[in-house]
Image (cartoon, rainbow over all chains, first blue to last red; front, side):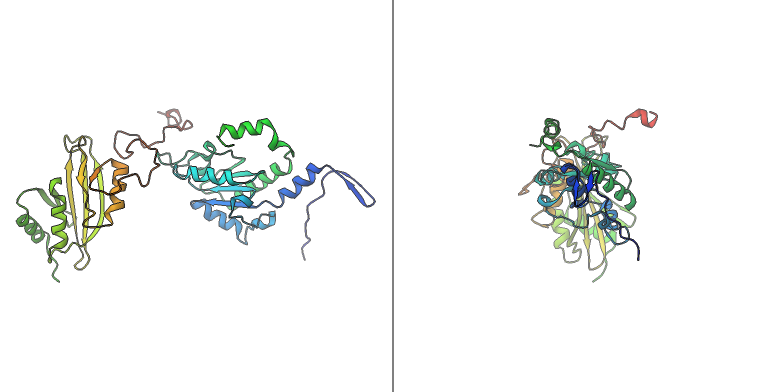
Length: 180
Length: 168
């Protein structure tokens, strides 16, 4: 029997029958280990994502085994694959439907920069239409790289101040993309 | 059903159409007939309905742009197939880009509908009589026809790839 590893408690003051810490740390910890990803897979990076989800690499180990195919219930938008310009408004619509807090992981060269498709019909990186939190390069990236990207997202989630989404800087960022 | 040779197919076409056939040649064993765009429906419906020729299947249609050919810049290519004898034929016609119009062949093959829309989308060929000639693949806001040779293939908004990166 291997030892079951559980998440360590955040910094705080522990005593007989009580534990004191800040709300922010507990919420961040809980959120980071229960991200519901929304896979937006349009091409070959989506196949790598399937490998990441399957038993060998097993994204479930990171608390993300529950795919949400409704944007309204998901926390993390994973964009995997080439986004054509015609798909751009659809992707933006999906992002707008997600509830706060929401994060975006851009997987693969095409989603990050257009990749080899430097052509009139392909969006040259999804960060032209939605804000991206973590970029995973590769064509396509290995499942290990996707897992690394998820762990980077988890770091962001864990350390995000509770009021970040209410700050004027964040509103300004969204306004820069034309999102209310 | 007897498989007709290219010469027999061509002689039947030439006896049915005294005018309108520009030239004919064989390329990789496939008969290619160049015709004038005014007879496109008549020629295609003859090939489709003739009992012996029986080219009943429209494999593909597309346009091509040759900017150097004067008054023949735009080409319209049809590929037909006879399943029963395994015979194929290629039909080409050329016309000036200033007047890129040709009659639609939807009355003959309904499958031409979307293919003609795609050809319009990429080359700007106007199909007279098409019931719904609008863009099908590219974004609706696109204001040019991207497969015409004067437009660059690369996306214009990309800044991270410049000539310096390729030693130019």
